[in-house]
Image (cartoon, helix red, strand yellow):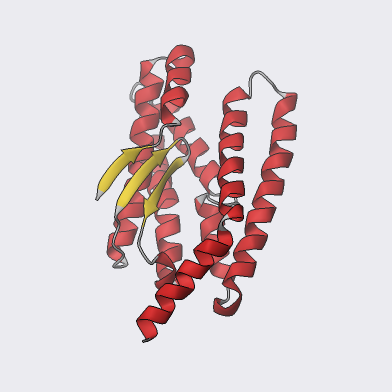
Length: 204
C-alpha cells in the first residue's frame, strides 16, 4: 500500500506553520495518520485490498479497487474506521495531563465532528450513502447525495463568510470539498458505467 500526500496539504500546513507553529503542524499530521490507520485496519479486517492512501486536510481517501462489489456492512465498517480511531484517541487523551494534551483533544474533536458530517466525501456521508443505497438505484441515490452535499457546502460557505477572516481555514476546506463533489457529480455516469462493466465481467 502506498501513502501519498495530496498537494493541497502543502499550503494548508504552511498556513498552520505561519499561524500556529510547528507543534500544531505535528499534532495535526499525527492525528491524520491515526485517523487513516483506522480506515486501513477496518479495510484489512473486512478483506478489502487497499491500493493506496492519500492524506488530505480532513483525513484521507483510500483507493480500494472494486469497492462497490463488497458488502454494505464492509463498506460502512471501512467508512467509520477512521472516526472510530479518532474517537478512541480522543478518549485516551482525555485522561492524560501531558503538555499539549488539550490541543490534541481539540484537534481530535475537530477531525471527528468534521468527518461525521453527513456529506460526501466525508466518512459520515460515505457511511450514510451506503446505508440507504439500493443496488438497482445506486446511481440515483449517490447523485442525490452529491447534490445535497454541494448545497450544504454552499450554505456553509455563506455562514463561514460571516466570520471572515477568522474562518478562512474552514472556508478553504469547504471550497476544496465543494470542488471535489462537483467533479464527482460531473463524472458520475462514467463511474457508474465502469462499475456496471465490472459487475458484468464477474457474472460471465
